[in-house]
Structure formats: C-alpha cells, structure tokens
Image (cartoon, rainbow, N blue to C red; front, side, top):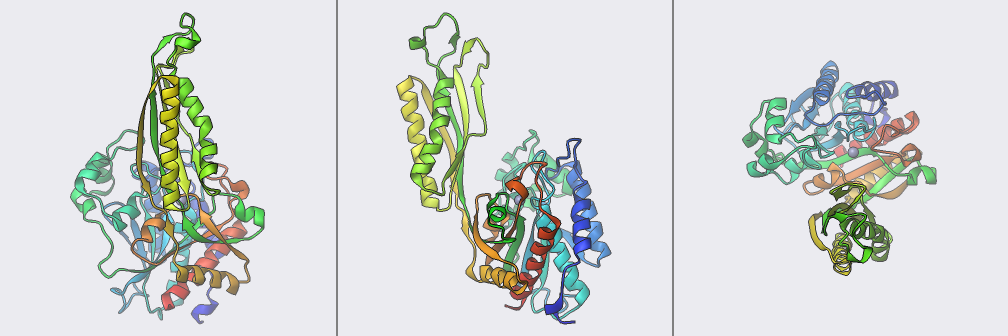
Length: 418
Ligand SMILES: [Zn+2]
C-alpha cells in the first residue's frame, strides 16, 4: 500500500470522539472539562490508553501539553523537525463535544493510520493536545508556553476561573514545579509545520453548503473592563437631574458599541458579556458599574483603532453624565496569518478528495495563532450545525467529521513530503 491510498478509519474516529465526550459530561448534556480538573485527568488517562493500545508513545510536558508519536515512523528521523497536528481537549464551562476534541482525536487517528501503514515518512508526525486552550487559567496557555514562554512570576500570578492558583493546580495535576513549567519552549530542532482541524464555530460553511474551510487568518482580539463610578442614592428621593447614575452610563456605553465597530470596519465585532452594578439593588441608584468589552478585527491596526474609539466613547459618556470612568484594556493580541504553503496543502488535499473548499477567517482564537509564531501553520474548518459552539448544542455531522479528518490526513502527508 502506498501512502497515497491511505484513509482514516471512520468508525474508530467517530467512536473515539464519542468516548472522549463522556468525561466531564454534566446532567444537562454539556461538558465541564477545564484543564487540570478531575474530568481533564480522566480524559488524559483515557487518551493515553487509546494511544498505547495503538502502539503510540505519549509524552506530557511540564505545562500539560500532550505529545503523541509513533516510534516506528520515527526510526532514524526522530530528531528532524516534525509536522505537528492537534488541538485541545479542555472545554469551556458547559461546553460542547467538538471544540478542540475533534482536532485532537482526528490528529491521533491520522497518526494511527500512518503508524499502521509502516515506515517511509521523511519527517516525524506528532499529534498534540495543548493544555488549557480555553483559558481556565490563561487563554491558549499550553501553546503560549511553547511559542512565547512564561516566567515563574507570570505562572505564580495566574488565578483560575474557580479562584484556584495555577501554582497549586499545575503541580498537583502533573507533579511538576513552576520552574519546570517556565522551562517549556519550542523543540530545539524546530517544527516543520503545524496544521489544526477545528469546527468552524460559526455558520458560514453551513450557509455556503461547503464542507471544508481553508483558514486564511485568525482575528486580533482586544478588550478588558470599563468601570463607571457615580454615586449610590435613594431611588425615591433623588431627582433624576441630580443623579450620578453609573448604571445608565454603562448601559448607554454598551448600546453604543456595535455602531463603533461597524464604523471601524466591516469585519469588526464587539461584545459586552458581563455587566455588574454596585450596589445592585432595585431601589438604589447604581453608584458603580462594570462592563466587560471584547473586540476583534482581522487586522491588528484596525482592532487597536477600535479599542481607542471604545475608550474615547466611554470617556465622553462618563463626562456628559457626570460620572468617573476607569478603562482597563489588556494589550490587543495580534491574530495570525496562515501560511500560504500550508493553505495550499489543505486546498490540494480537499480537491484530491473531490471536496469543495472555501477560504474563511477565524473569529475565534486558536492555538494555531501561537504555533504560527514558530512554524508554517494552517487550519482546516468543518461546519458547525447552526453555527452553535461553546454550548451543549455544539454539533458537527459524522460525515463532516470524517471529511475533515480525511483532509487532515492528506494535508499531513503533503507536509511530511514537502
Ligand atoms: Zn477550540
């Protein structure tokens, strides 16, 4: 058998994806599987077991990234730059069964298929599962450790969604020290290429009736918190024109945001996911109000420009309403352009399988944007039914799962030879 005739085992792929979805499944059908949680530990154990059964080797680094390799395929070439493929197995709270999981299971299926076919590759292939992609402690944590690195002080300061310190969660989950974690970086030999299969998490592919998306780039993301400070007063005795109502300032600000995004560019989006009043009482004028802001655009400069407009708008609304304002935005994270050669390999793989493909950009952040810093990188998208994601309603049809994994296999083969 030549490598060109290889196909993934669809039944095994779908069964593994279903089996992984059991870990962390809650009563409502959603998945609670934050990195370094008990559910994550059992999922890791299961994954390692599946790999061992297939004759594959599993290595976990000091930040929890899992690397899977085939000793048979690496004979004599183990120290050459490898082609990496993967994603993540952690989930957002009450998340779905496909975000990340698809890319990891498909990567393992690709490696297993190659392993069974035997030797003859000119570059090693590694399946990878990055830890804490969803940012229980830090967004894209595992791939950031590889591509950018963390200092011990940065790791010390990380607090999880549930209030736990990474400094406690990581050593107890992995028996490593923070110094070990800070030493994680790219492999000395480099990475030949990285390709990630992921669900679209939007509805463009479904609407276009096309099974494969070739990702062109990942958006830049900025945002943080805006706090309005007014004065808490009695809801009955304080005349409307004497109030310093932080709640109304925050509300006006939130309502104004979409128009600011549209005025910046057709690609820009902005979201207010959290709004809190303080005190929060039905008969109290809010003295303080906190609003979260998440803004994104394909181009970094435009995202930064949008961030500036948002800050200016907050200041204008605050001064007009006689309240104070504090704007705390994190540094806008650059997106990433996908590599032309990897994009070409994906498009060629889809065409070779007779599958239609379109170019598409990613509005969500992915480990691929970190990998793009150290290796030629590309992403394959498959349709999400109804565009739903980060929800128990997240679903990708079996056919699309298999198509995605098939394109991934062909792409990896092209990259291994290329
Ligand atoms: Zn994901």
